[in-house]
Length: 172
Image (cartoon, rainbow, N blue to C red; front, side):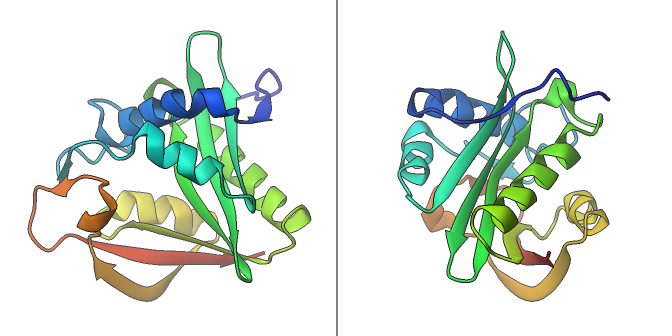
């Protein structure tokens, strides 16, 4: 897919609700390969969480806008000697066309050139092998760090017992 007509931009604060809506649609909606509705119920995020993340001076939300909605978003935050990647979403209608790969590459370039870090970290639901495989194809490795699903973060309620998250990292 040709992304020359897409413009990666820094998200504005007034887009917080639209970002929350996109993340929820991507992970808890009814379509797209990234949905988790079979194992997790409830919203993945909300406007307040996005606004809080936006207020981090060492972080940046990037979006690709379309006239009718957001096409994609990704969050990059410097944490010590690494960059945390989160809120990564591609609208279900645009999934499987390379836009996610493009967004991730842009976030990694920002982390290296602007934040000056060489290690990227993220966490994913361990019971999502297809999502872990997506990141592994892009150079991320499993760290072996696995934790109980973080109910205290308010990112949904497990529908299946024993849900966990695991940390992935990539050195660039």
